[in-house]
Image 1 (cartoon, rainbow, N blue to C red):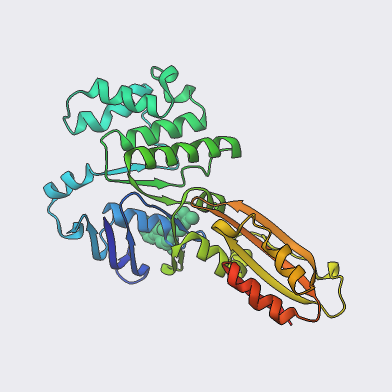
Image 2: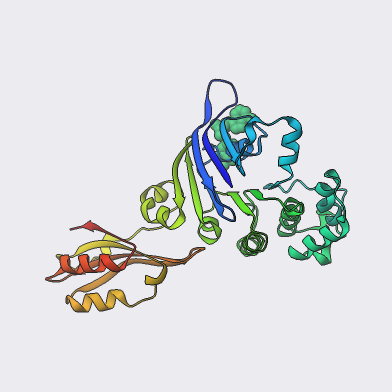
Length: 324
Ligand SMILES: Nc1ncnc2c1ncn2[C@@H]1O[C@H](COP(=O)(O)OP(=O)(O)OP(=O)(O)O)[C@@H](O)[C@H]1O
């Protein structure tokens, strides 16, 4: 439903802040855009919105929206919902009035009913007559999201929707985004610098580095293959400690489990089969959107470590020998 081909963007006509960006978003998918500060995340969102004029193609339901007239663009914009990090609510209007705005601008009918439905969906019935100054951060973000989806758009852009919120409120907003995505089948692009947001709700990830696509694809593959870089750039996930090693001649392996294999006693079974003893140096299981994802770093010892590794490889998503 959205296909971006060879997108480039420059603000000054010389330096490109987006370079040859290409990716695809299918209907109903949630795509997370991540990258360090200055990588070009906001610029990409602005280019997709055509708030900035990029070079290249943006095919929205097979129409190249970079080539449209103002009037055609106005119609397409009705199909795009945007919620900003700082909410951008009108302070003199109530929750209800803020959410009504896009419908009034688009001269739609049955505004009362549509707004009431959306207010119910985002759980703000009890706050519908409140003014933004009297709302919590989470409630403001609910209003902002409600306003973005009230026109029933095909695509929703969310710019850092949880970065100003505490962890509990973040979780509630992520649940809301997932619910909206499932109920309304809205394709969603979410800019974030929070890895947990990507893991919890995204199907795909686009990792921007210096204005270029460094990775685009499935979330689980990204966390399986880009670990070292992630540790360096974003957070310290794995800091397994070689001082915890127990075996003199042990090998060290990293095992990634994804989906069904998480939670099965595979390791126990296969280690018994080859008479292998193991010591867990690091282990973590996380709930990704589509399936659980587990990572283990093991120290192994025994006569048949090679056979053990070969056999185990068959049952897990990925296995890497870190030290022979
Ligand atoms: N309006 C603008 N005019 C000129 N340069 C800009 C403009 N907006 C952004 N830039 C530049 O474009 C590059 C990418 O910035 P952008 O804000 O898109 O990055 P970002 O990944 O969203 O960063 P952050 O996480 O800090 O918001 C930066 O070098 C920035 O200085």
